[in-house]
Amino acid sequence: MVSVQWFPGHMHATQKALRERLKSTDVIIELLDARLPGSSANPLLAQLIGDRPTLKILNKEDLADPVRTVQWLAHYNAQPRTRAIALHAHTPGPARTLMAECRRLAPHRGGMVKPLRVLIAGIPNVGKSTLINTLLGKRAAKAADEPGVTRQEQRIVLADDVYLYDTPGLLWPKIIVPESGDWLAASGAVGRNAFDEEAVALALLRALQADYPALLEARYRLGLAQAALAALPDHELLAAIGRKRGALLPGGRIDPHKAAEAVLADFRAGAIGRITLETPHTFAAWLHAAQAAEAQRQALRQGRRTARQDATPQAAPSKPSTRSSP
Ligand code: G4P
Image 1: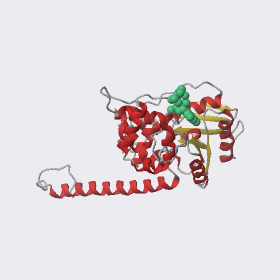
Image 2: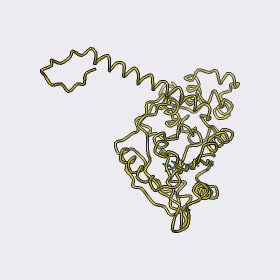
Image 3: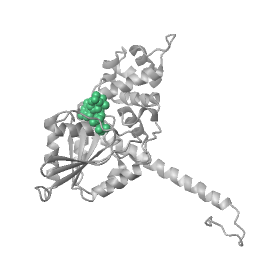
Image 4: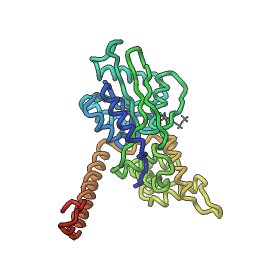
């Protein structure tokens, strides 16, 4: 699991601005990464959205496993006041379908008097700028979402009566699902200095060994049967890939860091194949386990705090004390 540092100070201001904007929003578009829909969904955003109509867009569907995309779409479409579509943000025709979906979610809005107000949100690198530029028919102009770079809200006129509000990327303070930390890092959502590339590549390889061994073999031609490839210890698999990809140190030893970089670059570019790292079912199980572990950590912390307070001698009655009694 990676420990991801990605909640810069200005996020509190972003959160406040978003809360304000939501007061006059009819539909929220939540842009998700189709390769990791659960992990790329922002829990903080879910809290802010409440039960407002939401369009979930599974972007980068061209890189995702089509069978799993169908499962995720069915999962989201079964939720109240929610529609879900899958997109490749560079393709104009499908991108425009999102306007029809937004209108369906807020049929009471439209026309010059009551324009449809749509807010779009998504984690860094999920494809927000690409999608907006496709909708506007422009060449992509990268809008920075790097930590420390603040961006103002933008209003984009999609049609005479459809306004799209683009918010600065909202991150969340703590990623509690360990798998999500790994997948966010593997997908490129997290700046490269915020995680250990080797650890993330090993986590990715373990998932691919379990779910996509044939794709691994086809990409790296390791000469292994699927069962043998799936059973290989992760470090050995990384080393074998490093050897194939020429990730070598002076003297000919394998450079695990370079090998990890190669695996991550291949995954991000879709060179290993169409891959989705979680299903609604597996993600729900991880979330459940992570919430239980988090509750246990909190209980332990609380227990230690209470024990410390119990062990602290009471202040003499004549002296004022700022410490509350146990
Ligand atoms: P952001 O605004 O949400 O931060 O993301 P942005 O649009 O900049 O997209 C991040 C990267 O993801 C870009 O690649 C972009 O081309 C790619 N991308 C966006 N949507 C899709 C999609 O549906 N499918 C695929 N395959 N890629 C997508 P980049 O390498 O960072 O930039 P560039 O090479 O496109 O200039």
